[in-house]
Length: 302
Image 1 (cartoon, rainbow, N blue to C red):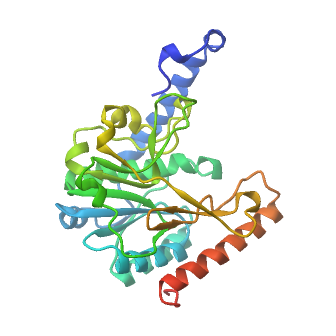
Image 2: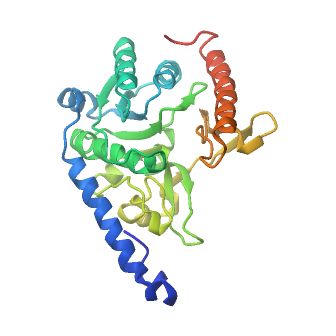
């Protein structure tokens, strides 16, 4: 939901901004609600529910990059023990989705192909991502009742032996806390690496959509559903460490969340000239591929 009524200025009230924002947000949630009732278009939901019941589940939201998915599957298999790794494919490109499904099948990794949302522009990626996460929660995780679950991006990789569920032994939720609400107390866990103990959240109406009016990005709607009800000791904030690449031009960097390496704003700002942006993306990808190849013993997976 948007900001509380009391946070709007007289000028904003004069422009009817509180009502406009609520109208737009209601329309967004209506679209979400419709899509959440639609079935997946690939995978076996019923068998997945049985497989993950009482387990630890690592859900990767994939999007149009089979190479990243292949490397993540290999590194999770090597470095993360005792969990079900599920690829929830939110790709808009049919060819990429086909490649991702084939890679998951060859590796024996669980796979679901999600139905694409109505938001296809690059700047609307957060909405599509939030829909994918909420669909998995409501249609798979909630009825299956795993002991714990986490959502990760497809471009984050465990570079050494690690247990991302370990903080949940003493906390209800864990991840990278973010606050972009203009000095307000509202915060959320970054959608690319967030973990939850099931018994701590099963009775909450989790909603991983964004709430731009309240200053909350993808996953931020959970501030109202969950996070505002938690005590500080129930939250493990893992933070983030930035690693510049080269001279760090245009914010070129990798991100570390504990033992996990994230490409970090891989697409780079859309405001950059296309030629410059493309060159920087290629440079960053080359550095990342070198790191991943080394972590995999010098050989990239097929």
